[in-house]
Image (cartoon, rainbow, N blue to C red):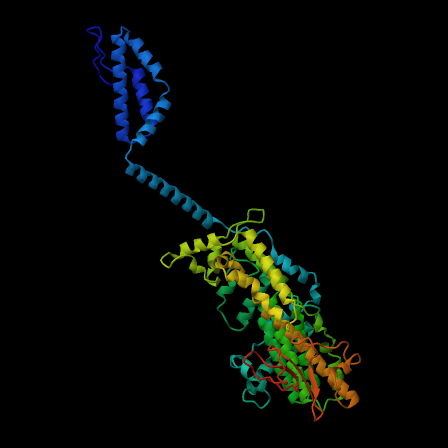
Length: 580
């Protein structure tokens, strides 16, 4: 309340602003929401307005109470007055002040929005809804357990002694020379003696209908733990830790079976050489047959890596088979040759071997549901915490921002640029279909070299390269894998053709003039070289021996030479068949 002397009719005086008017002043001042100094000015102006109004009305002859009532009614809505006063005061502020305040507000809103966006991104978690492990295991579990090889072989491999390190280090460069009498043969012989009691069980597993490894189960981890313990390796902490629930189940899936089956195949190859040196052709061929069947079982699996190991094992087995036949070419007995003709090598149908890429597609889809959020409609954003795990594998992912920005800023920039879930999946399917169309072409078709074109188109655009970075991580070099698998099937055909040619010579006393003479008595169909589309190169030498070879990866006839060439490997020689 403010004291005031109000003259009127000579002696009328008012000491304080009456309560109704003082309340109006308080309400208006509160409603302006101005700075404290501005509120003081507004209060002073309103109080002065009411004092002058009282003086004027009392001088006109009105009673004090009447004057107060009239001023209160004529003042109007105090809330509207507060808004109008606030607007006027703000308009009257200096321009530099307005610029400062607006900049501060915009900065605060931007920072708040960015902070909220970053918080939303970093707070996002994967919400996997599909059990792709169950899907990839469905074909395996559909086979009765008694028809699966792995349940038999896993117990065998737990007792299997791995190849000594001294041999493992020189396998690729020296193994072709390892025979009884070689300086390393005593070490090989010791390894053979340790594992020979297991051969009947390995053979039993190799004769099963399917490989039968069940993926991503606790049993596979338990197998690896027990394997390491039996080998005396106590460093198993990485195996006993529970799987990170944020990791894609299929992408991090372990395949402990592959290491041991490759070791078993190498053991069987050395065992065959030992038997052959002792003059026991039947035992030697039996060991190679077991190795061959182990590899052939792996072709019918769900992952590309297993199929590539299948090709590596059958390549080893058929090469050793051809070398064994070459060493005994002039002294095979009818009984020994009957063993060869009745073997699983001759009953195999390599033309039916095709790569199984379903597992690769399932791995991609499983990775997607762990790297992206899920809105329930098939869409979502990339999750920074997840993306950071694979950022090191992405191509040029650090190029989005200058070097002086921190890694978190670069990560957020990469996530912001990357395509959303729906677009990523759609682009993957489009790229995959185009690549697959090229990869279905023959190896000798020049158009097949364009299989990487869909990926290169994305990679050539700096923005697209970042936008679809996940594709470069999850799409392997399928062309190389396809080539190795087709070559593996051709190596089986090459070994079969060698046997058919030897059978022809056994019946006719000479080799045929052309491969066409093998059909249909010795071969059901005419064979084709995957590297030419024509029959493999074949001719009979002046000495009556034969030569059989494929053009090889350089697609050029080098006369059967196996010497490396500048433009790729030379011919693949099936006969003569000395060990490499």
